Length: 64
Image (cartoon, rainbow, N blue to C red; front, side, top):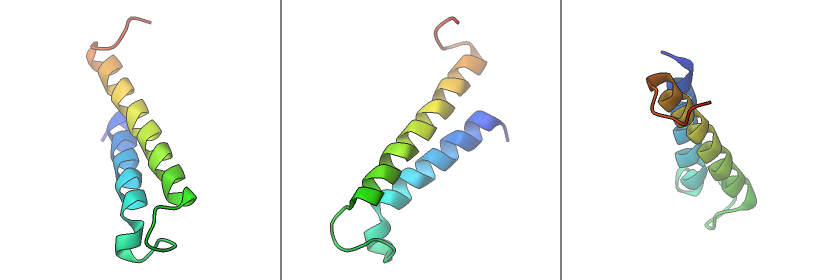
């Protein structure tokens, strides 16, 4: 597995775990808290970095 795919997978996993933490009983309550929002944002950023790196590798991204 290459680095962009790993980043994408970790980001998506963090994204979904953050949003569903309450349903699995690992959240603070019934509402989305600040830790879940932080995990959601960090997950999105990591996934976006993975996507950008994948696009650059395939030559689909902006020229550097």
